[in-house]
Length: 211
Image 1 (cartoon, rainbow, N blue to C red):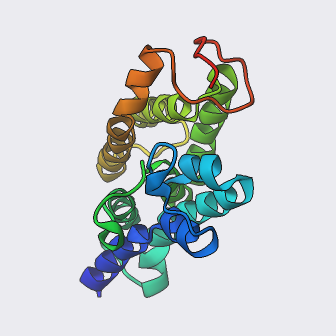
Image 2: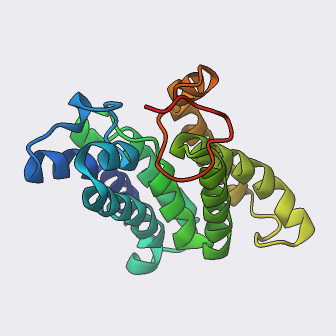
């Protein structure tokens, strides 16, 4: 049962929400537009706000549901976060989309929401504050991931939000955050060149060129 549930977690993460919604409802392949990515940000940019919200929720829920699989199937003795991480890997390298997936932000957040909601809300607050300051989803994602790496090591020692001694939690949060950061390499290069895509909200404190 454990092996089947682990496979299910990966397959759940592999559902390419943005790609399928674009093809079925808009007759558009997201890979042919914008950044070519199939995740939430490019969906917003190419298909609009409603489609973007739906894709975000679906990608978020993939991580949450995968993390809850042990509870749903009565599985014990293995951290739910392992199931969540498999969903993140599935989202990033989906078997249903030639292993070319999204950047793992929404699914990673969903994983944390399914296991430790207050910590997820803390990182979402960091994301929103950074988005307001920079007007960049990419920068907000990378900053939130960086904060996750630091705080998953620091907070347990301070008795804040996270339990002490859960090294599976530490390793999986660092792994998921690292995937997010690595997947945003091209965005960081554009940020350094001052030509990253902006959202129409916030202060744009890094003075990216408006597109």
